[in-house]
Image (cartoon, rainbow, N blue to C red; front, side):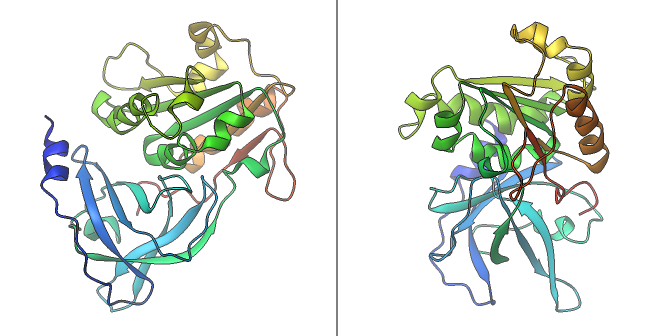
Length: 277
């Protein structure tokens, strides 16, 4: 049993009502590494969102005012609770405080979901690529648990790159659980392909998402043809530099960037919360 699992099992499920405006109660906290943690909070009854969207969450700052950042919802639209996945930044204005939350604590959650990583922003296709680094996997944690994902595509490829193997654990555990999921296990079947890589620690697959796409290594490893605009669709979530680099690669394959109002072959989440939070 891992330390993270032990911490989760030891956490009580609180029933108290929130006191702050737009607040929700933390129900579970799980620390995956010394840099990564996930947490679940109660879901407002009125909140409706599309899997892949984000909301503004946060805490009260030292000045007494709300300190908010955009966080992708990692749980699917059908879940009764809301899950988030975050990096820990020791001197980050928000995560320096957020990383210490416990079950029963309150967080602020502004119930106005938005985002571009939604199925409506893509044209129909055969293969869907989820391309992420670090905590950029969060919106795909939602979409991998969304039935619509498997209704619309013959194959779903989750490419996720982290520096070290331990940082892949959140995604690995999620992917492995899906085939036995009572709700969508049959839909997932063998449609979901997981392609994790590391950049610093030795692993069976290594290299950045960008390098493995540009070199064609991922296509060779998975026995797939290079991306083409007729069959392939992609969603991108990472740092600004990552997004820019992947966008150029996808455009090199002939794919065009879309949006909610103009569906095309790929979309990029521009509100990703990175290392400075």
